Structures are given as C-alpha cells and as structure tokens.
Length: 480
Ligand code: NAD
Image (cartoon, rainbow, N blue to C red):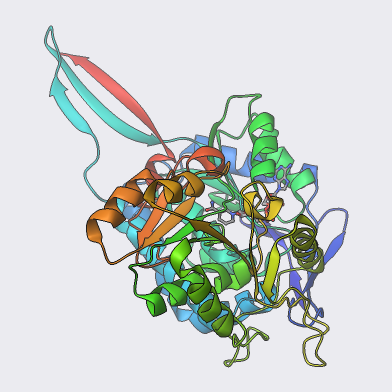
C-alpha cells in the first residue's frame, strides 16, 4: 500500500492531524494508497514556504538558462520513469495504459518546451520621446496556487507547473483529492532534480480546505485552476480578496459537426474517439454530435454498431479500449444523466447501464452510450455529463449547424467534418470555442494555446500564451 505525503519547503510531511484518505483503483474499487489529508494550517505553511523562496529570490533570480537546466533534467527523469508513471496513472485514474502513456510523453515534452522557450531573448526596447529609452520586460508573478482535476492528473499539473516554474514563480500544487498518486511521484522527481527547497510545494487534501486556502490567501499572487465551471466561479470569488491574477480552464459541451459530404468512416472514427476517449471524462470531449439531417440515420447506425464493439475493461489490460469512470460518485452522476435523458424523451441508441459482469462489477464501468431524438433545451444537450455519453443533434444547413453549435453556455472546443475546405474554414471560424479541429479530434501540442470562450474559462494554457499567464509585464523608462 502506498503512503502519500505532502512536500512542503523541501520536506515530505504527513498530515498534522494524521487524517488519511483512501485512494481507490477505479477498475476494482480496491484501496491502492493512503493519502495525507492536508489541513488549512498546512496550506498556510506551504504558501509561506513558497512566499519566502520567492521573496529571497532563490528561484526567480536564477538566470533563465539555469532554471531551464532544471526543467530539462526533470523531463529526462520523467522519461526514465515512463513505465512507472504510466502504470500509476492507470491505477489511480483508471485510463488505459495507451492513454496514460500519451500523457506521460506529453508531460516530458511540456517541460522541454518551456525549458527552451524561457531561454528566448525577452522583451522589447524602443526610443521614447524626450530622450527616454524604454524597455519592456517580463517578470514572474510571485506565488502561484495551481489547482487541478482528476481526469488528467499528471498532464493538467504539468501544463501549469512547467510554465509557472520556467517563468521564475514559486508554486503550490493541489492535485485532486481523488487522484494524488502521480503528483507525489512527480515531486520525488523534482527532489531528485535538486529543485531549490520551497520553489515547488505539494498539498494534498480537499478543495474546501486546502484548495480554498490557496484561493483566498493574500500571500498567493496568482491562481491557475482547471476543473468544473461551478468550482471556477467559487474560486474566482474567493480569489477576489487580494485581486489575485486568475486563469480558469473549465468545462465544455463541445460540438462535433458532421456534414453530409464528409468521408463517413473517418467521421465515425473521430466521433467515437471524440466522446469515448478517456471514457468521456475529457473537458474537450465531442459530447454533442451534430449530424446533417440527410445522413443522420446512416451515421448513427454505423456509430452504434462500432460503439457496441468497444472493449471496455481495466486500463492495465492491453485489450481494453475504454476504462472505468474515476470514482463511484462520479459514475452515479453519469448514470443519473442517462436516466434524465430517458425522462426528457431522448431515444437511447446504445449503452445506458453500469457494466456488472463478474469481471467488472467491482469497478466503475459504464457502457458507451448514445442518445438521439434530442431537443436543444434538454439538460443532456446543455450540461456537461463528463462520461461516455454521446448526444446526437441534427441540422439542416450551415447556418443551422453554427447556431446549434454555439447554443450552450460553454465554448471550449469544436470540430467540423467535411471534404469542402472552404466550408470547413467558414464554419469553424464561426464556432465560438478556443480549441477547434477540422477532420480530426482531440489533438493537442505544447505549442498551441489551450482554453475556452464563454463559460469554459479565462486565459490560455500552453504555448507562449501559457507562459504569459505566469508573467507580469513591466516598462522601464530610462532618461538618457
Ligand atoms: P472540480 O471542479 O470538482 O475539482 C477540481 C479541483 O478543484 C480539485 O482539485 C478540487 O479539490 C478543487 N476544488 C474543489 N472545490 C474547491 C474550492 N472551493 N476551492 C478551491 N479548490 C477547490 O473538477 P473535477 O471533477 O476534479 O474535474 C472535472 C472538471 O474539470 C470537468 O468540468 C472538466 O471539464 C474540467 N476540466 C477542464 C479542463 C480544461 O482544460 N478546460 C481540463 C480538464 C478538466
């Protein structure tokens, strides 16, 4: 049994109240770890360590090239631990080994990307009026609280930690209380890489206790949060006390628009991948599949035929194509949305139930599910279900497709499938979302900004934008 502790000011520390939380394997419900349950006092200690390290300059005053060397070392260590991290991510979150393996590779790449980016010459210089020489430079913001969800425990942590550390901030990471395992492993890697004490701190525990302290504390200068839209709203309020900088990566209900002139098999492939990747527990999931009326029946028939063949099973079985949901409560939430879909009058096309075979009954497995005959205002059409539940809608023409695509409070992602290049560009430009695809789905790169329009968030992660989210901008005016 693993014992998971916090890492504060360069020390591994147990919860002062010796409270432990059971961490379960979603594939069979067995306890895999005991995690220290952090208290508000411990959150204050972690914040104080990050504050002291920032104010003393140990990390922020290092030359970017020196910080970069640390990040490259961390990337190499992650690669050296690729298999171990993959197995632990599957054990903790439930995702398949293939899915977890992509995450680990992306995580190493993200550290390398920011290690390179921070060595680029920074700023601008120009001649102002009256013999003033002006320079514009970027500086770290200070102490950054990083709060992440359970669906990509490693990846979401690193999308924040790599740019925050590269920019010279000190950080306090709070992983989800449900999936803290790989964050602990990552901090062991930080320790082995010799990161200065206090530069990176790890808090375990609940959102209500340690998460809220990070959001409220006047010693924290910036909160970067990924998670549900409602939690984002709560955090924004809590963060307003000292007007800390804030980035929010929130939920989605993303439209996957399929025109009749598309290559049907390709569109079906990506529609399945768009919703069932990660068992639908992905913020950018293509959870609304908008199909042109004239091909609806044909498309749905092929989709359902393929969905029924998806091999659902434990993530550590190489035959599994889709794993379980992360915890029992979340599975019950997804099942209640399925029940609601039936009550609202949508037609269930496939799935709809927990899988209770002998092999899977102790895990949190739900069948790949799809509904059609929906109307725009149904809750299953408007709300994020965050599970393997596809909702079909139909449209008559381009204008109708765009109107439907944009008719939710969210604006995270979206895609268009068509063989007509001009139409693809016309339509995708009208989709009000920050992450869009044409004839593909779910790709992401360290270089490309990630984030949402509307109630899907504020700010962007990744790319140069992701670095700027962790930087202040200063003008320096020098009289000559
Ligand atoms: P969640 O909002 O319940 O929790 C996310 C994190 O916030 C956890 O660490 C939790 O402990 C913490 N938290 C909860 N209440 C808090 C509070 N009052 N103060 C401070 N911290 C608090 O989300 P979840 O269920 O873990 O994750 C699923 C959600 O995350 C989905 O809505 C999904 O769309 C979203 N998500 C978005 C992105 C993106 O890039 N936009 C990526 C992944 C997940």
